[in-house]
Length: 155
Image (cartoon, rainbow, N blue to C red; front, side, top):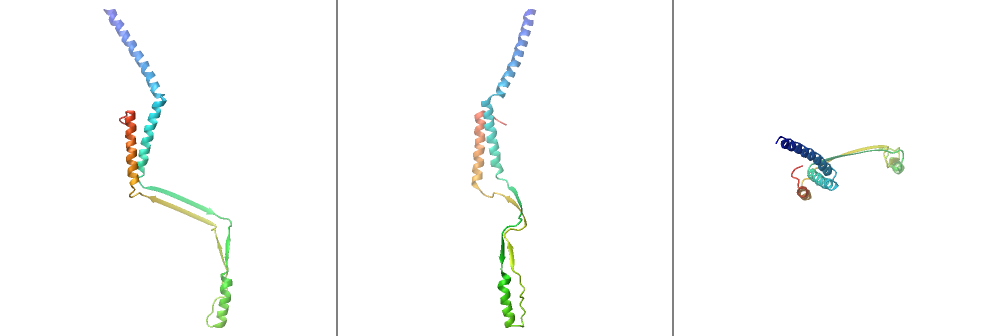
């Protein structure tokens, strides 16, 4: 009877040892199963898309800054002095009591400024856009479908 109990004890110990090795092999197989990894990746992708759809309800803030420096460029000469100075001389000749200026310079306008800085700050909040609600519900349903496909209750 003693021998049977000792033999049974060693048999049970041997079974538990094999069970641990078998569990290690099963865990290794599950960890390296590409099909299973692809299913979990699909589930994570649908959860990420759902979070992006939920994020579309929140305001978005963007900043756009620009600094330009021009070392030349085109110039337009506007002959204001050439047009107005002879007229003012004639008016001064006809009516000497008014003294119109006759030394008006010609204008020069550059197309590009030498230095230019522009910064725009945009805050956008969607108020009513039904497509956002539909997109959110579709993505929520896709997450539920992926969870049911993989028989996952929680992540």
